[in-house]
Image 1: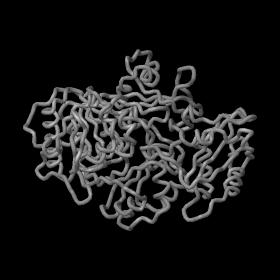
Image 2: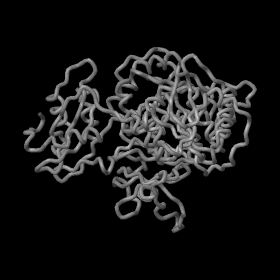
Image 3: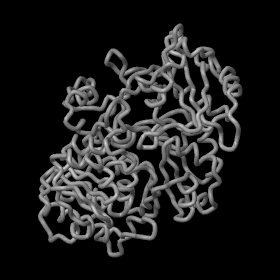
Image 4: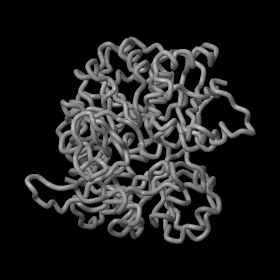
Length: 529
């Protein structure tokens, strides 16, 4: 099964359901299938080769989805580019993976300026919408002309071939492209749709960027079961709850910064009645946020998930386990195995910590054109059952987790995020959970900054709670009550807002750089100030 089959399998139904909704426009599965085939024909006519890269640099709209799936229908690979990226970042992606065709709008194309001229492998630009452009020698094709091209036979591909390149947020340098096969994407869609119990009755609100693996998942899990996906480019959190009520949404997935804001809003009765589940990914959801959401949405099942772009999704916590172990990231999703490997290269026992290692059909193909980084993250599966040597590559996440005696996993922290203070290794997530539980902050990030005597001091950068003043003393006092002395923040600093990367996550790298010198003698900082 190939990625575009997720759509075509429903297009032949006698009464095909709606596949996509965007504002006032609706596409049935049959109409979407026709657009996907039209895109494939146009790309092939433009000379797209097998595994040729097609970048899609648009906001969420019907053409964005048709372009992505049309690229794989032709036998190429799509490269979704986050519409929030700056020209330099977009240019890096286009050059890094040798994009052949760019699908974008006139305004976005003009904003790229000289970056387009610096992409020698880019031969064609497909424009969605009206407007004038001037890009020199590149071939320019209007969207309507692209999809009107005559039928052409696609390149032959199999499920192990390249289907997409997803660029990570680039927390350490420029973004790197994770290569995903048809098998990776389809297996991920079927696995997640299984445990979310998705079906044709579902209406999924797509609020995350399609360039983010969890955002693309809203499309693929919906299409896998014939559900309806509503595309949304929201400006304010309140827009999300309004749309959830208007469309009587049954499934909504977000990242912690979004949930932190949504938890403080009043949900319309229509959304409260219709929302079957809400799911979290991209980081741990604070306990206080989870509690508020469960109170506001009593009919909704909470799914707490963990994943990484290199393997899409790894674990989830079943809703019936949330009350027993709300801090857990759960167990392996269907069709995956999660190992916890210690420093000695062997699986650890209950109560011990180790690196999360993911094996199975969702493991990606590696990083585009970067064998050195690929070799560090994509490595052989350790050992094998009964001594069997398995010639298989797994993803070594770089994340430290703990396993309990029932096999449930608990996120401890990124190895490069761990705070080392007073001889202890402190998880920033644990500090953040406590700060959130105080009720005295809106959003918060815990960081380690060089300290002259402690190794690292703990810095918490936070915003004020919605509609209330910021009280540093209340945060410190609560932490002193709830945490051992070595985990109490040495500094709590107020900010009006916290920076985010293009996927909507709080950008720890930017904050770490900004507050790296917090405890330097010339700053004269004192604990708790």
